[in-house]
Image (cartoon, rainbow, N blue to C red; front, side, top):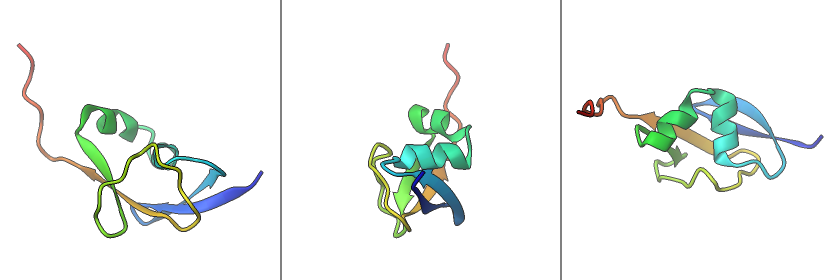
Length: 76
């Protein structure tokens, strides 16, 4: 199987061809997709621009996952 090396929060992650940023983030930490979906986290490229987690990645792609320290208010 052909694999690519990408970087998530400075950690090298091996993913398959045609993998998305979400695939790489999930492989890095399986708890992060829930935070991304809820809006408590987002992914940036190597220079800090937000990226779509559905975008495919290339070898050497650098991503950072930013998790908000703010807690959402409890629902009534």
